[in-house]
Amino acid sequence: MNAIEIRNLTKSFEGQVVLSNVNMTVKQGEIYAFLGANGAGKSTLMKLLFDILKPDEGSISLFSEQVAKKGYNRIFSQIGSIIETPVHYKHLTAIENLQIHCDYVGVHLRQEIPHVLELVGLHDVKDKRVGEFSLGMKQRLALARAFIAKPKLLVLDEPINGLDPMGIGDIRDLLLTVNKEFGTAIFISSHIISEIEKIADTIGIIDQGVMLIQKPLEEIQKGNADLEEYFRHVVIGGRENV
Image (tube, rainbow, N blue to C red; front, side):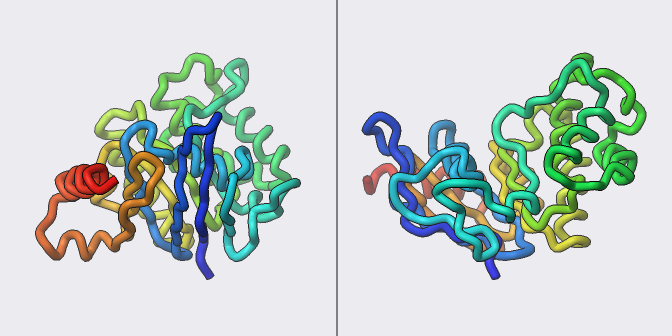
């Protein structure tokens, strides 16, 4: 069973094509890195995964369950996510934010909150109001919210944005732990390609709404290719062929 299957996905806004006939497969238990420049279509595709946006054409399946054109999919309760800037209740504490999240998604895991806050490095500020948090701390809280239900799939849009080098390393280790110990599939986008290279199993590159390549990182590295240089080569080549 695949975590994500996308077939012939197309999306336009006001006549402008943002995604064009995209096909993608994310295997269960793998870390799939979704790379592209700003405006390439990454965030749009992630919103389509959650039925926030509707496709013009094509289909999306999550663990073999097709994302409905209308209504809520039960599979969404088994998926954790950070898409674009995370939103929190600023007047509440970290603990209170996670309690509300657990109640909202119907996950009775309040006893897991201290452990999850420890994992993301927020245990010492668990009673502090989120409005006083730095950007990096808010990002950590968003990760805690995404992890708490022990999801089958994590969809993460720039999860290390705003973190210092120590924080980036901590989150990298955490993602690897979640992936290896729980078999959680991770679909992640990031502009920090050097970090992606340390964790990814598969690389997907999109540019101007067109999926240019999907390839195991191991195959890329066999040619002694640096991932950042490989990314630039693929994107420039793709634009020249459009």
